[in-house]
Amino acid sequence: MSAIYATTVFSLRRRTLGLRLLAPIAVALLPTLVLVLALAFSSSVQALELYRQYLVPLTLYFVLPFVTMFMMLPVLSELYDRGAIGYIYTRPVPRWQPLMGMFLGGWLGMLPVFLIGAIVPAVICALAEPDVALSAWFNLVFGVTSVLGIASLAYGAICVFLGVWSKRAIIHAFVILVILGSVLGSLPGEGQQYSLHYYLIGLAHAWCGITDSATDLFPPVTEMPSVLKSLLVIFGTTIAAMFMTSSAAKSRDVL
Image (cartoon, rainbow, N blue to C red; front, side, top):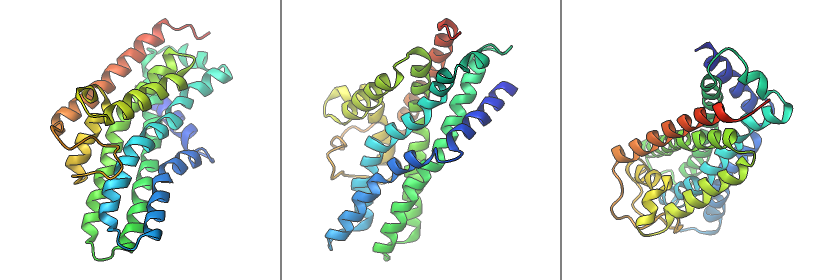
């Protein structure tokens, strides 16, 4: 297990030290720009509902997949580019252990990005609508961050798998996470149930108090999946993706 710990620390430091977090944080704060513009040009906007109806859908639809790609895909691509992946793979440990460590390091690096993306707009909204109890903002931030943290396990595992399996991981990740993920999961009809995004919506409705969306990025609130079903699907996807990562690592020639 020392290999997992060592590569977790390595991956975390590679993704967070220096200026590497600037781009993911900028992406995470883009919905906040929408919020500021809405508050600036409308005097009748209720900040709490604005956060729920606009920022939460935008965060799940846009921030989650792109931050995950920013944070996870370079974990392996940098090693391939530098020719260092062979050093990782030829250590006297099973290949899945360093890959698990790189996955965990990238995931841990995403958590502060998501937290910043949730707290900053909440502070702005709290100042704009001081009548709302602080507990309401705390619960909303906790709910959004929890959804993002859990969802990024599955999204991150998919990115790690694609990084091992394909030399064009960025293209495949965009197709799977954005087109087949967010877009398909936001369309009405039974097809949305085959997208992870659909189950993230179920968590957002349960944990963020969302009953409506003003962005048209969420489908109508009918037959939402339960929290238990959503968690099972997300964790099941994470395990399946990491299992496929281990299998792909055994067959890919890296030297």
